[in-house]
Image (cartoon, rainbow, N blue to C red; front, side):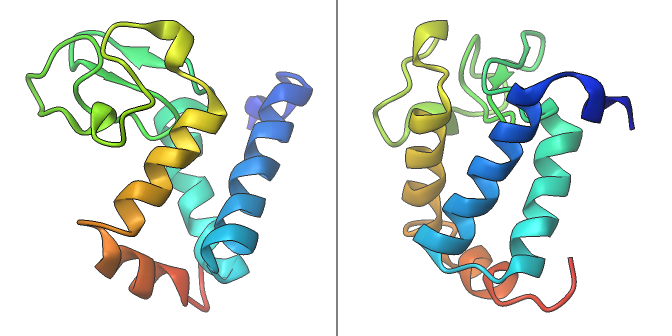
Length: 118
């Protein structure tokens, strides 16, 4: 897709997500690749991506950023503040990923994390 030509930030962000999942969380390469497909569809790997109608933001379009019509997952870890775009960083969003995978989304960590097919 044309997202490949959007510049090095896109590729750098994709690599950062992949490395985080495989090296810090312990995902298989296939599991991490599947997660990257979701991030590509949701945000094009842009941590500042927003859909204000749905109140969602970030690489995985978490709920609760500009409104809480779909819930408020984005503030659960504490680093991201609702409505404060300066907190929409890769570092903060990866902290949220870790928080979710070690908490309420632990089943995803075990099933997707050991996937052998993206």
